[in-house]
Image (cartoon, rainbow, N blue to C red):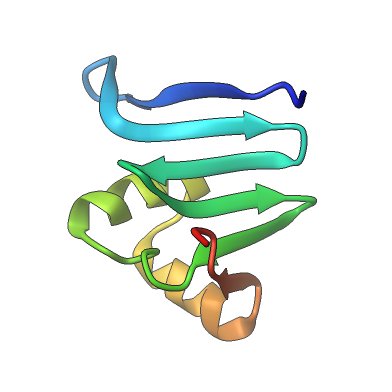
Length: 91
């Protein structure tokens, strides 16, 4: 079985774990999951975003931005340029 590690996202402002926001480390990369939905995946130097949920809410966007170390404007630019790939991560 593949070695998988799950941890809560960490709030650098107050030092606390964030409930319902997760980093999932697998042998194939790392995922960002918000509640029960995979939002983003980093794998082999590429970034994949769920086409239906990548910009679902303000909270999802905040933690996605922390996961990707970017902001929403830059994320949209990277999607438009093809640097970030929109796909279905939840089927």
